[in-house]
Amino acid sequence: MEIVRKMTLASRPESVNELQKMIKEKFSIDFDFCLSYEDPDFDGQLCSLVDIEELPQKAVLKLVRSESDASSIASDDTIILPHAMTPERAQRWPDVFPVPAFSYEVELILGEGNFNHERTGKTLKLSRGQKHDILETLAAKMHSFKAYPNDKEISLVAEALVTTHPCLREAGSQTGWYGWKNSLKFKMGNFRTKLSRAGYSEVAVNSGKRSRNNPDKQSPHTNIKRPKRAEVNFLPNFPKGEDGASLERQRLQIVDEVMKTDKNLPLIAKLMQTTFSLRRKEVINDDLPVGEILERWPALKMESQICAEFHRITNINLKNHFYAELDRHVPRLQSLFRKKAARTGKVSEVLDQLFNTYDLQEQVDVNVRRAAVLRALPTYLHEDDSGFLKLWDQALSDEPQIDNIPVGLLLISATSTDAALFCPEKVAVVLEGNTVVDFPTFADAFVMLFALIYALHLSYPKDLANTFDFIQKVLMGLEDGKLKPRVLSLKNDILSTE
Image (tube, rainbow, N blue to C red; front, top):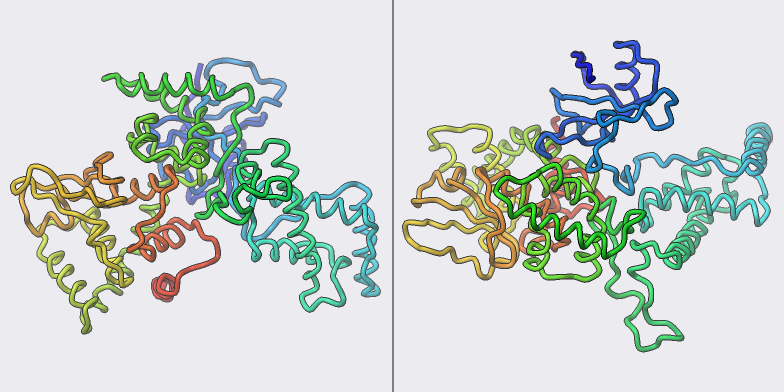
């Protein structure tokens, strides 16, 4: 029997662990448990609470006894649902790299070396085996966050190492860790090679290229398939106990279920979670056309599964995060855009016209404000959205002119009015000249298109590189440490007075 309790918090806890402690104290719970919550993006289905930021302001939580708890009794209502989020990687690259514990022998040597360094300033000389242990452990830890860390991230690891263990600082290096950085680079490459030989998909996809024994194959430095937009789970292996044939049977089950009028949404969510690795293989390895992928995986046309797929890839709650950040920045963005509109020049003229139309709207709610900012963003960043955004007046034509739109949005309205610019009757997502799915608001369609770009591994529209760079790295926080100049300037402007 389930017991329901209500708990009110004065503020959001800093972490999931802190929330668990508060629940234990409040309700006198003496066993370990995990937390699941009803996620509105997944039609209220249970998802494991990994990041405290994913928790809605008002949430329904479910306590699930840990498997290791001796008092746990197996029952239907104490098991995490199979479709709960259990990604291969649960975290993105951290701001401060956590140096792991090394082997017992190495930890003893480092402890004594740090003590002597503090007293005498003398650095520690490691044996070959000891250095190998440190590099191998660090490579494994780096891989737990990312298979292909960039130069800056490897530098941060080397710096964290000598900060944690000052006895390893290099006297002849200006930074004190430059040699460690080079060693980590080579070790990470060797680590990926071993994983590739073991059949690890994310790195094995880039193996088997031109070599001395295979001179006719593709160059090893071309068409490298790796995460480029801060994806956390890019190309996972098949789940244990599953193979291509078993996952294909589950895919066919999804197709049958989606075709039903009364869909079993929990079953679809469960099957989509299990078949995630097969889907990523088709998207990344096989490079299937968008139309064929959507035909094979029709659940990717459902809003709940678009959100779920984005969560599987990035470990970020799509709509919660996007709307929280967008609404936080809307006042400042509108202020910046209006200031620009008051000046002279082509960009200012377009912005002035757009906000004149916005000011004439009879009703301005949160959806109209969001739409105005998203409509003005490309212009402010000196980009042309004419090849991305199309208006279909159904009174003037029977079919929309979208054949030449690879990635875009279609504003659908019964009449051509100024209101259609911000609040059309519906907005459809367009991929490769075909409408995929439609939504009631501009912002909903925009964020779902953004998620589908991740799910289908598509390129951003060439004419809107700055716009999508801003959405990805500033609003969604999926940063790789590099911002385009105009995007960096806008980020500085919106944060300067906040």
